[in-house]
Length: 242
Image (cartoon, rainbow, N blue to C red; front, side, top):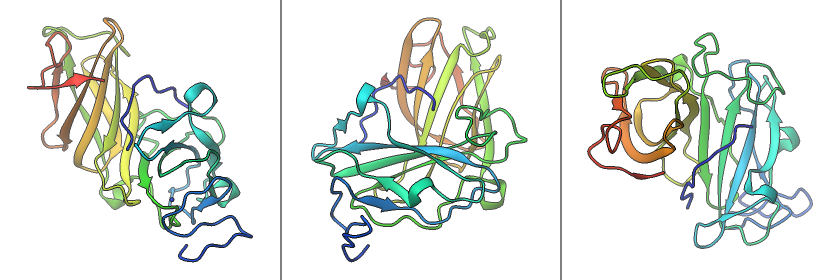
């Protein structure tokens, strides 16, 4: 699992089936499970993790304040245990991230630069424990593109991996699926990997200076962003610290 070094302001069927641990809409009770049906993963396995949020949309920390419910999904699209268990009490919202892996069960083996891996990650919000079916990873067959853009430092090429980027597609908090990826620069280029064109929350980290910013911007293949790490907001008109 990749380590997230930013603070993200992350704000779960119809009948309660106590024996199976499923929950009715509007309920995210401790000890229940959010069901996940077979996914379309295009032959790639991966892993997922959940953030649980309280009534004020504050993150309920797992030990170490990482992800809850860490588990694999298979290349055939099945999630271990059939879904995501709600482990803490007081949950009012969930946000779940799905990471593809180049090598099944080797977390972190994905490389967003490698176009031979034709899928990207996804994230979604689940407000009431509803079942999540027909999830699919970004792929060229469903409109995804391999997005790359530009980065410099006062016109000079930065060192490889100096800048990291985390991208989250803006989606409603109703289990609508959005693209998601984590990557870094290679020379004067950076990538968001396989994503669907749209509006994104972007977190940029300059590991040479320790500066980081958050912006919301459109990512579209015909209009690549151009960043300059020497500028106050890396070239954006406005930003805030990540």
